[in-house]
Image (cartoon, rainbow, N blue to C red; front, side):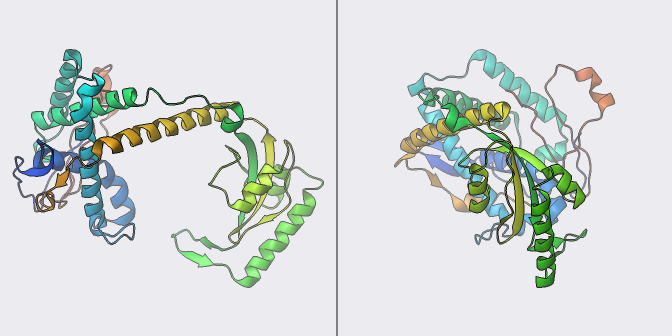
Length: 355
């Protein structure tokens, strides 16, 4: 359930203004505003809970632009992608069927009915715009499938293999307290930790990793990794790759932590198959991106920055899930969300998942 109360600085926009052009295709401010606000609505709760209500005016990534500008820019890039695909859909014999159009119309109507008038106004949502965005999503999904059909999906067992491991990680740089404040360790503290780690290393000659970790109040974490995994520090990865199944490493020291690792199984079958699918998905995306880039080469895409700047971020959205009691009668229907009042907030959530 989603609702809204007071709105601040809610200025209307001319939805018919041209936000961008792609050849003879014009992209309206209406669709740009709706897509931008919709994505913002999905992020507001998580962003503001950690960073406060001024989050959209922050330079969150240190690139010299605000988060608001980052989202506007990424939205326009995404619209460029989707309208490019729409412009080339006939080349791939892609179309939206009558049945798909019927579902799109129904989903758009359900979305508008499920949200408050205030939220709809802030989103700038209309039946036509919601249907347009859903059509673009549908075209993108169908185009992705046909554009990646020639992807090489042969992945060797060696390339896909994921080894199961258990690991103890002991930080030596510093720690966070319960309030989230970080304190660097003193040299004395670091020396104490390293001395304890040495004792653990000696104990591991006689005892199991889990036993030793428990004796010294450390946690053993397990997982699976590929031999070319980039998430581990180089020294840790090298040590892991040199271990055989069942073997435990000696103390591995880096600038930030000390590690002890055990290889539990040479092949974690479930993780390996998941990794195989990830490799294929990465290849598909690479093929798709190459073809998309070629489509967009010298296509004349132009963004009217002064028009896009009119999209305002004055109001915040919040998402409130519908209660179980109120949803029992909607079984087998598409998930929707309504809008609930919060001071100076409003919200929306996608009601068309799976379309």
